[in-house]
Amino acid sequence: MTLRKGHGTGAGVPRIEVLPPDELRAGVPAPTRPAVPRDSSGKFQPGHGTTELARAGGKAAGLSKQLARLLGLAELAEDHPYAPYARLAREWRDDHMATLSATVAGGEVGPGPASVISSAALQMAASRWLADEGAAKGDAKMLGQASSLMNDSRQNLLAAHELASREAAARPKKPGRLAAMLAGEPKR
Picture 1 (cartoon, rainbow, N blue to C red):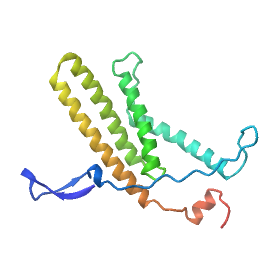
Picture 2: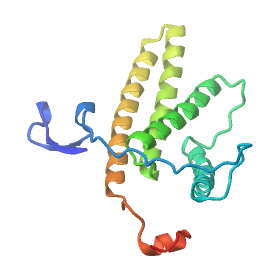
Picture 3: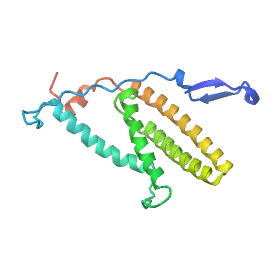
Picture 4: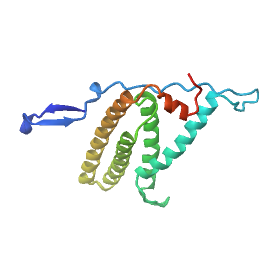
């Protein structure tokens, strides 16, 4: 995000704007996972990689519950007309979070960008529903609302990218000695 001077009717008035795609920060790629030792039958063996994998699994389970609430609390029946779009929003949000985490957010998407991505997913799903309904009914107003939601979703994705990359850059590179001891890492 950046502070820019307004133009047109808002000339000279400063505005906070989301950066265009070609000006977004590169971000921080996710760290590589340590190798998980396995025996000849493929079962996990004790070791640092196994511990890290288990820790990541537990963290992912907790985050999954939090993320579910970001898309709303309504439980839709499978035969509800919006149900496929809600499913699309969940799947798309999860895929985008994984991509953002791996490519920009240093392996961890914080709650702020997660909320923005969830909003973008809802906007995307609602835009698809409105576009389908508007096309079926020949309703130009619905198609215009769909287009507006598509643009809002795009802006939120740009903002989430920016926020995730800034959080990744600001995150401590290595845990402090106290954090390492609490995590059970060997002394250095």
